[in-house]
Image (spheres, rainbow, N blue to C red):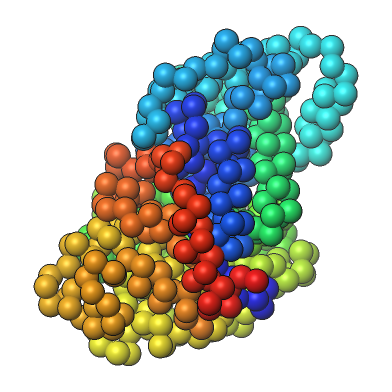
Length: 494
């Protein structure tokens, strides 16, 4: 990990402004990077960039390797001639993401672009495309999975014909031929995603901005990852999960959280040196400069719930792979710039694992003001190898959080920050940036002092999440100057 003191902004690309109903990798993304550079911010943290499934959550994707088609910029595709300017739709909402509407429009236009590309005679672009196909080991399996899912009207893979669900060689060959056109479309879509993202990352790096990516520890059951690697997961004879992931009951939930992700067969994974995980992190490091391991504590021990249980109450802690996973990753890939999301029920064993491999943990300022001066989220208790946030994508905005507190709680926050109530948001930002933590990351909503209406996600809520968008005029030169001056004052930018 870098030893520099750095600060940055948390913003998922879907939240960028633009004409196509959701943020994308187009001009607005470069303008945001320009703002980061002007504001002295050298980190841009994003949420997972995979193709989202149920609920549009970036933490529930059809693949841990593939990219989300909704993030592809259609104007860039039109510039290359695969779409016409008249094809582009500009009547989608700009203030929020309407995922259903955007998905319908972009799916149709990306398939049209793929058809035109395949029919074109541009040999140079086609050579680039085929090189991408040949060098991307997971691509055909994912494209076949997605083509089959569309062919079977969105049904999960375990409800496909049995021979295909179980991936018999004959069935895979038969559907690869039968759905060849759709498979080609999916490969084109992934080609466009990765070339646009790599160009954007190159632009960010040239501006001195590094990208923090996010790797959820578990994957969705209905995904190419599970369909293509069934022996690596704890499934029964029919391919259904025997046990699923979650977290036990706590202060926030009397029944815990039953996430429903299938659990890995870690012993089976260990037999080939955790090859799937090594491949996954190698892929991630091709996309980002740092990778945050979401639910890191699950590497040390995870909450195992019988798939028959409706809640997370009746589960048990089971030891994870711990050192052996990171030793295998390090032996193949060398030291990696990873960040441990070490929130929740954290034991000394989790902390020991984190520290043994030198991984920064996370500090959340919104968690700091209960339990007295020994609260580990208070800045005076930080250790240097940390990443501090005012809040994350799962928290309310800081303005919304503060508004929800009692009068006594508000007084305690203001006393610690030595500020008035109308100054709390920026003083929370100052507390993060001035702290000894090596990295400080601020959600853009907090930099803009937005209320709860700008919240990104409410955990446990199945609808209305992930849809917040930045308006085009909210990032001003004045905001960049204020942010840069604060970061410079605390030695986080030159």
